[in-house]
Amino acid sequence: MATRQKLMRAVRVFEFGGPEVLKLQSDIAVPIPKDHQVLIEVHACGVNPVETYIRSGTHSIKPLLPYTPGSDVAGVIEAVGDNASAFKKGDRVFTSSTISGGYAEYALAADHTVYKLPEKLDFKQGAAIGIPYFTAYRALIHSARVKAGESVLVHGASGGVGLAACQIARAYGLKVLGTAGTEEGQKIVLQNGAHEVFNHREVNYIDKIKKYVGEKRIDVIIEMLANVNLSKDLSLLSHGGRVIVVGNRGTIEINPRDTMAKESSIIGVTLFSSTKEEFQQYAAALQAGMEIGWLKPVIGSQYPLEKVAEAHKDIIHGSGATGKMILLL
Image (tube, rainbow, N blue to C red; front, top):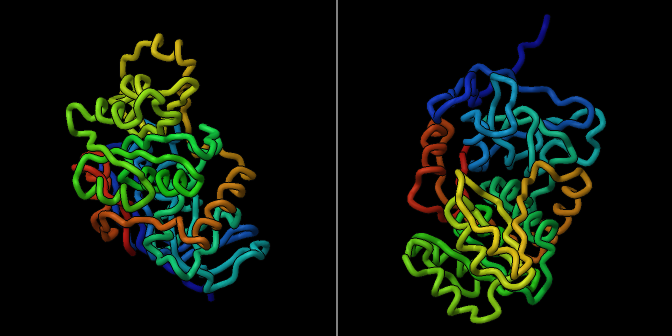
């Protein structure tokens, strides 16, 4: 007699659109890991802005419908494929990608995108590492090629990627400035590596930054909302300075002349362009950060799986991020 396949709850998207297209279903078959795959019992899953763009159909990545969103899960290995020898049932892990989707009770992942989660970090923190920390590391080390002693402004520093960038930049010996839009956000930015923080809702905050840094200006800007800030960023850069565009939600007019005298650069970054080898390199650096203690994810809003549509609405239209948004299972 055939054994009945185990079922799970998972969020499914049957058509691209607004947050309302996220449907929670309870009759989804639990996937079975093959070859180099592992099955993870999910305890928490990170929510990232990119997942809202993919869901709306406006992103260059368009998954085959229906699909389950989510790449950053943390949980416990439930089963392993025949060739996934690095892991065993019961291991605490986190991921930087999944095959079957992370907004679910179980997630299938390729073993090279799965990493051991140290005991000192809980599952919520594990779910906050993936996209934020790997993106921040790629932006700073790979794209900006930062050097110790340089200055960096994290423009929009109180969300998942922003706080990760502050922690990494401080650990790598940079002078770290951040911006946030709320008092709570500013406090969290200062607690997580920034030497100084500015309120980007204040009309004259750019003047305050210029006054703080003086003639030298800023070597690297990690930009979370380029469609609002890019022109201002160019005025803040030092000679040879670079703006790394991590986030953008529209168009902006800039004067290219602002890049000429300073020979400054505007560099786009996307985590999805990283090679397997680059991911391994980033993972090694981040694992060291966990062991030493400078990598400490800050958890923000937490939602049960039932409120996933609300989470997607809030991550785009909320009043200012403080920490990483998480789904709890």
